[in-house]
Image (cartoon, rainbow, N blue to C red; front, side, top):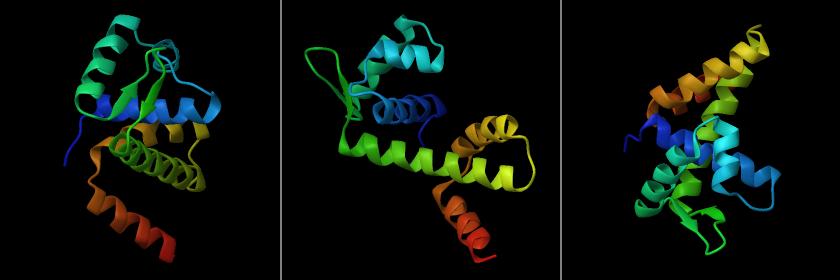
Length: 121
């Protein structure tokens, strides 16, 4: 199943914020991604409707099982490509930016093949 880059960025951000803070709120996502709070509100509504997140009465956002699975997948690809590019001698900031683009455009099948190939070397 193909997901859009925006959805993947939101879920990955929720995952990363959740690793740093005890709770995730819309304002945390807005600060992390540099988006307007109104954009975050629309995205949160859509992610909730698609069963990627749950929102408590207090406004705390948690990933559902489905949301966490997708977020972990995106984050794994990001870390892998970032580390690989740094290992090739790419500046860490550039590697991070490029990994952020690469993580969204590659299929799961291709990612697994590349990862397997590189890990064998």
